[in-house]
Length: 349
Image 1 (cartoon, rainbow, N blue to C red):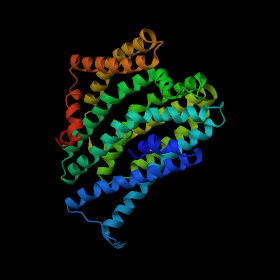
Image 2 (cartoon, rainbow, N blue to C red):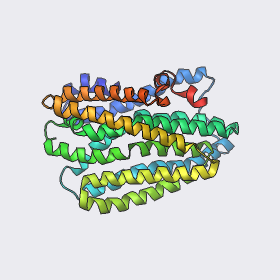
Image 3 (cartoon, rainbow, N blue to C red):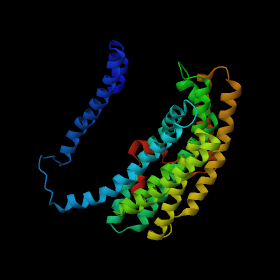
Image 4 (spheres, helix red, strand yellow):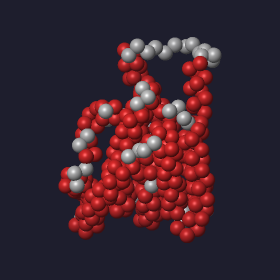
């Protein structure tokens, strides 16, 4: 809200230089507003923040030791993005921009569902570990993975199929011409391949974090980072900016699969059969959804890109959920209640 208010109401009154500075300041104001809004609720729950720092407190030491690997793990994503950007600088003009915009588009469903769901899953799995209830941990993990598959596989398919009209409507204006749209769509296509893996990796990492085990996800992420760097150098020669995106997707699948294997060794069977069944049904429903969206966007409303995109999205979502009902996919049932209750009751069950 802070950013939008600045852009819509204040920025037009400023010079371009001050517009950029003002936008940065609006981000800071928005962050402070988040703290101010939450502060009364925290106090009502009985928590109080005081200006007292005890470095000898055992809890502080424990958190510090756990945080160090976690911080390294989080930095891996930033390092990967940095490597991709460096490689893109050796490609044709506009490759860095294409890589950035395509990643932003791909990150939207990932942030809304993948990262959000892994954040909700972590306390539920931590509670199960604290109660030594491994069955509850496995069920929470299994449901979380199946749910993000149910949401993100069709999201990935949709971005791959109608990525061009999405980029065209969102960005193609000014110096962002048709060539830039095609270049960005190339990166988006391959980034989208890895969309389910990005989210699954975060959920599996949360399962390790619930055991207060932060080193294993970091080690696997570091290996994935090396794989990404090697593949970037190789694939960019043949596929350009699309190769950089494909390298990230391949590395993300390695990250997710390796973590799943290690988690299975740690806690036993994870219900992979149920996950595979969900993935198979999701692929069937997603392919039919893709056909409908493609026909709407590229044939029925090809000369009206905005309308075609809106109808392609709406029609695709409608067809997908119809197929979910036909295929009797149980993951569809808690979807509405997930938004109403943050998904917590289903994870805890």
